[in-house]
Image (cartoon, rainbow, N blue to C red):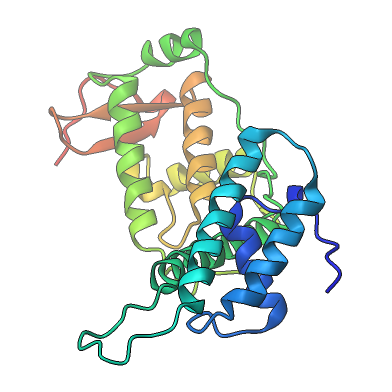
Length: 256
């Protein structure tokens, strides 16, 4: 049988041996050891003189196959009471273990190839990250409350939105365009304040809003605070946070 396999195509002796078994379409539990050994040695011989660090592993397997082949050729003792152990047993166990890892590796490679076709969509709205000086400027117009207090309240709203996501129904086949901007959310908050001059912080976030919409709404609120069009107050420590019109400030506001 002509051997055209290249040794460098295989990651190790088990890789080569498993390929020969698949190529010959034989049962891994009943390997025709003589035939497979001859083919294995032919590949080693065709490799010629190569780096011994690489060849050593293949040569050790070659010696193992020759040993198994010789044991298989020995006549069986008729008077033997004990059941003889198949000399191929250890080799079969290693091949089955190799097959398991090979299957897992191929599956992971398949996932990697599929992931290469996934395109992640950037938000349609570019969200400005507030600098330290912006935060200081915002805090100057807060009543008995810090920027951290507002941010923690925002994180609470965001975490509740994430917990309500239906993982089965939220899978999608297409990407939808975000139909809201910071300017639109600023107008939305102003409209709420037209209806009521004092609103609860959580009320500005719509119940069915997506995560990106919640973030944009929060950025719109920060922009309104920065431009002094609204004020944010907290009646007591860890109490409810309220938003009021900037020109409606009149001392301490009672919160219930």
